[in-house]
Length: 606
Image 1 (cartoon, rainbow, N blue to C red):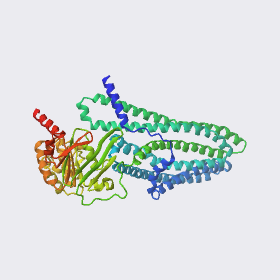
Image 2: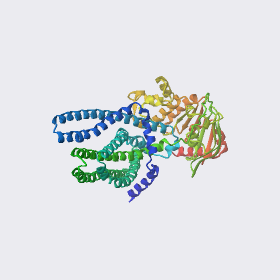
Image 3: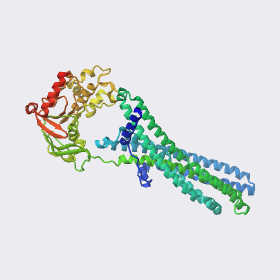
Image 4: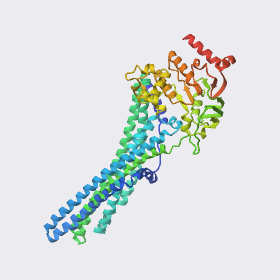
């Protein structure tokens, strides 16, 4: 019962962290937007594919006429076998032309499809890179991943086959109908009587199919989100022996994913047999009424044979159009999700006339700043503070007091919901984002290390830096001591998230990365929390040199690391309780004094 409740709670939490189903009617305007990604290739690749398609389609329409109306009737009437031999070679030649056309169509449409998928995935990834932190706060990494991979991949068949097949089948269908009416209007009308019923039933089917494929995309997103979360959190899962609960939850959403696929494919599979049944009815009408017309002299045997060939071909493009429509439904479900991201606008927008900051001094001012992550929770209340250029400023307070929110404002990861944040007297909202963020480096408590070498990770903040500059930065913060002990030194490949390194080693690399970027403002968010005392002393010595003429903002629970700060702001529940340097605050015997005293007691007890 306990495990079942745990799975239920996990499912409830997970459900609200993933995408909601997007309910929109099928509209060609959105599909037109999707097909717009073919525009760059409309004058190069697409024309060759269309020429190939027209060649093969023309041959398929011409061959039955030559076989039935010309060859068969001619032989029956005149018994001319030489004419038959000539027609065999002519038709063989035409099918060679059709083969060439099909090769061109398939080859160039495959090329077109790959180009379009490449462009679409690139556009989606590039757009996501520019979105604000609030966007990532509201979505799991797995749900974002599924849009870039699965949803884009699902459009591949549509672009490589579906688009050209629509055009080919529409031309084929129009040509067949025209030729059927030309051969025998009476017989054509008799067969076409079943089309209204077929259209009515197929419309009902298509609506259900579209909803089913939307559900498939939603379940895939949930599955991928859970996989991503499970893999990244495997150490926590094993530490708390929650493997069975995790497996049970995975089996549940994996089963839901399977059921959604089974339901969608079952409904999609009904479309083709329905078309084939319609074709069987049409064939029955052909045999009965065709024989009557031949007996009445209104139709020759050759014309009947040609008509029957065209009728067989008539249901084929209809069936394929049904398959293409299924591809369009899959594409619709995926494109809805892709365009939802592409239409997402950054919550931290950049003005068209934003300025580039030159010769930044580093003075930071908060004027009546308010901020709320959502309507129910206010993180900052009327914050007024000034960080003078070149000062080292510390933010202290209990968890949730607003320290990290303030430093996020400085980097403009979020905009205040009230008030203004300024850099050197300029509102951050008037500054170009890249110009601002080049002036700010951040060292977080939870350091992210990218796949690649140690030196690549140090160089991340300044890609043009030389190896010598990277090594100098690492040496300055004391990271060279452990780096030199690695198998290949600075060129050692680290695993995903730097798992071969300790937490302290990852923080030292992050420190070197930040210092190499040579920022005017350096933010240290619990940056020394996982570093031993000896290493911390080395970093403090390095900081004394490196922070000269730079503005430094430090967040630290370990108050011993901020004794030398020029100004300390003590926060509580998003408000500033007191400020001053260490000596001034100790003399006040206020909140800061109590924090220092409690830490001192904890150290004595330890």
